[in-house]
Length: 123
Image 1 (spheres, rainbow, N blue to C red):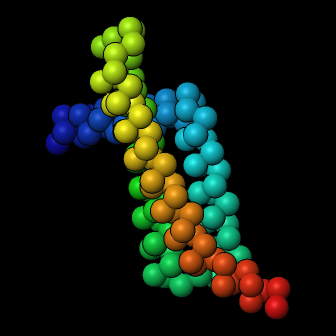
Image 2 (cartoon, rainbow, N blue to C red; image 1 turned 135 degrees about the vertical axis):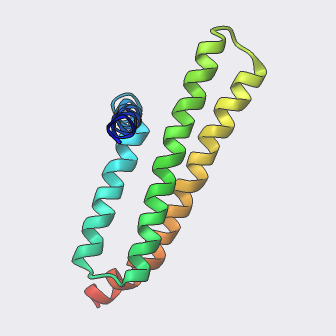
């Protein structure tokens, strides 16, 4: 049992290192993290329903996951070649595009949840 725990702890440690690397090196990840934090704060302020929390958590997690995958793809491409290659550009651009689509989707979900509440708050 001790061996399994040690391997599991090591595995979690590597995963945390990857997340922290992404936070330290990727400005967009820090932006996503900040916006996610603000969104969660808004959720508490507006006392959103459980299904709305579920939507927010899924979207925030989705953006984080894709940003981490994007960082992994960019790093692998850079490791493979330092020279310009069209396919390297395609790999990097499509990974970045996936993050952008998820970010746009998350903004739409946020607007669907919060816009009516903000409007009701002012009127």
